Image (cartoon, rainbow, N blue to C red):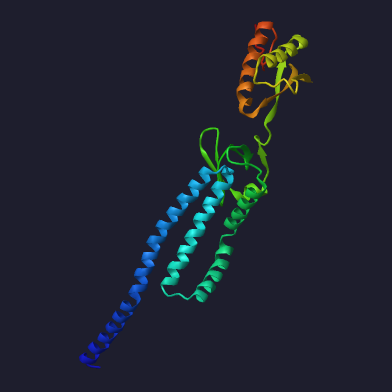
Length: 278
């Protein structure tokens, strides 16, 4: 094959490539335009949805979940429009999505389980945004419930992220499910101390603290006889938002009042005998 034939061949390839580029260029440009406009529309619709929920008194749990779901759904629709504009037929696209969905579903079983867990949390509402819960070995206030996970704010003001699948299938303690909460406060007194005086002091502290509820009535029991102490248990009730301040104050006041009354609170002691020669 001589040089002229080679040049003619390459020219033919270049001409076909140029024709294809000119024919396909409008599809590429329109796909880019759809993508840019679509992104702007998605942001605009997300703002509208957010403002809609801000004006309505909906459950914050439902708000965050639906906002996440709507955002993802809009992005999927945009991706389908862009691919279709590039010339992929709808039937072929459906087949591709079906095959890809099966492969992705098998690869992302955990994510699908988390999504299903999020739906279950939304439906059965074992907790809501703002509740203090204990789950999966973590304690914290529910900050956000999204499609795949739930965020907690811990005691140390850290963010803990728990997959929804684990939450939906695990044990959950919701400390805010009921408006009031009971505490079993345990304290030991010496065997030589007056039990009745100690009980009266604890009940008097409860009576003077407005945060401790008077109904149900606080009660004090002898819980057991330890090696070095008589163990008392004080049961009292308080509202969730006042529980911890009331408990901390009770601990402090019980120590101060016991000291004033001469009631001993035993503590571990070790006696060392010197066995050496005098």
